[in-house]
Length: 228
Image 1: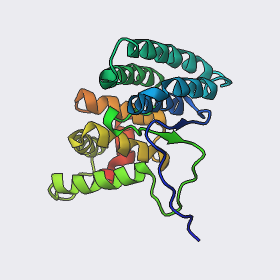
Image 2: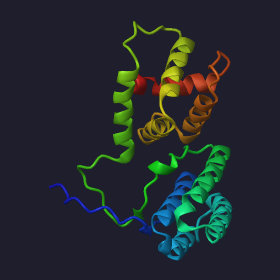
Image 3: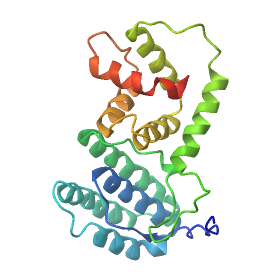
Image 4: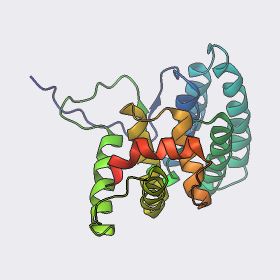
């Protein structure tokens, strides 16, 4: 019997669990910032919850946590000089810094600021009938791609031609759509996190894939079915 639908947590709620890896850790700090901006009076509680979630992580996550928490401290200091209405500017700057960490660690790219959840309660069970956000977004992206791309002829058997076609379709996606589609590919086992990060950076750069870019060609082949 399906579970009863649960009310989403109120904006500013932040009850995290310890992150399982660097990707979850960077995401957790980004969500903490979004939650703080949604409810400024909850900032002390959010800071405490974030510190507790990161307190006993093993290496290498502990090293990443130290770096992320230094950014968080700089973020909270900036908030003391800004009215609450302008906190989102500091939040977006923090998101850029976290994205830089993510690129260096080759983890999943973060979604845009406006797509980050404003609350997190790790104790809430998910309804069995409720699709995950990544599944919803991947489905949305597929529908939008169907509208954007006219039906083409039979694809070439040349791997490089297929890779370039897939890259073109990925690049046509918005940044948030691309990030969520890649996240769906990781969760579905099509890509590992390094491959997803590689494709994200490649599509942002807009550099056409070449024959010698073996890792990119291989990664594009793994996601080709998602954008046809």
